[in-house]
Image 1 (cartoon, rainbow, N blue to C red):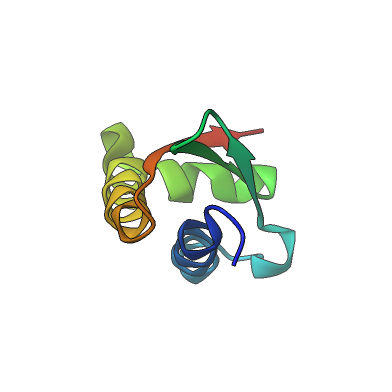
Image 2 (cartoon, rainbow, N blue to C red; image 1 turned 60 degrees about the vertical axis):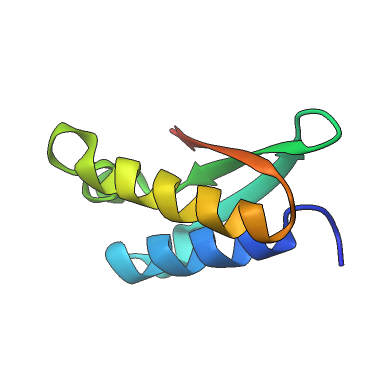
Length: 83
């Protein structure tokens, strides 16, 4: 199993359940050191607002769940939402 695979699956699932266009969701795990990864999330422009949510609440929730998933692999996780 590659580093961050659980995080990638969890983040992909959460984001695809939120958006209108699940086909456009792309989640890429980028290594940020030995025990740290960044999940880069891209969606259709029209869906980004839904993923971030009011005052960033949805984004904060996704980051929290991703961090917990990362703990399963012994990783520190950050989630970035990219245009």
